[in-house]
Length: 252
Image (cartoon, rainbow, N blue to C red; front, top):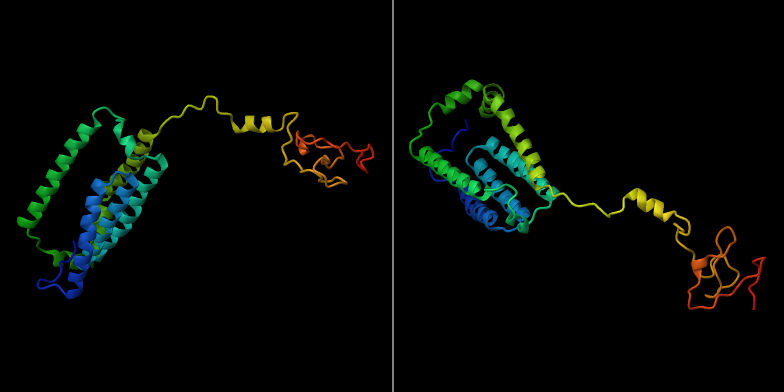
């Protein structure tokens, strides 16, 4: 796996980076839980994941740090945001249960996950003593090469199953959150087009008073390109001035 940083007092730059990013990571985690808007919650989580990636790099783990930033902060969170924006969820939608009993199931699963994470951290910090890390990296030709060899040979099936589960989860979220809207009474694009070109309707913009005419009075009807008077070019409140048959001079 990854080589640990040398023991001793950390350098000043590492201390500064920790005290700057630690509040960002903690604040992002708290904001993710407390945010009422799903988009804001996802953006808070992005801040936390990015800070964790920087912490990994500071602890002599550049590969896992870049994976944290590129895969989790970049790809997976963008996938979450894409699904949220596509289905248009907000805080009011959480009141309605799509599946019966999903709140109770979510609480139980959350408690179980918290217990597993706590147990794992306790064992990792108290009981597990990593050995042979340098020898393993030397046999594989490097840390990154060793991880790649294990990931795409011994654990390739688990890797592909995980990717399939992520895609399935995204598609399932879209299906569960999809809301059917009643389209009865809403005219289609074809019906709108037919109504626009029915007899009595002029689909193009109508000319204003005096356009193509020999007078500039608002009482003079406009002339269409074929020489006929446009019916709607003079306001009903204005007495209309009739033109001669030759369309050369107005009467009166």
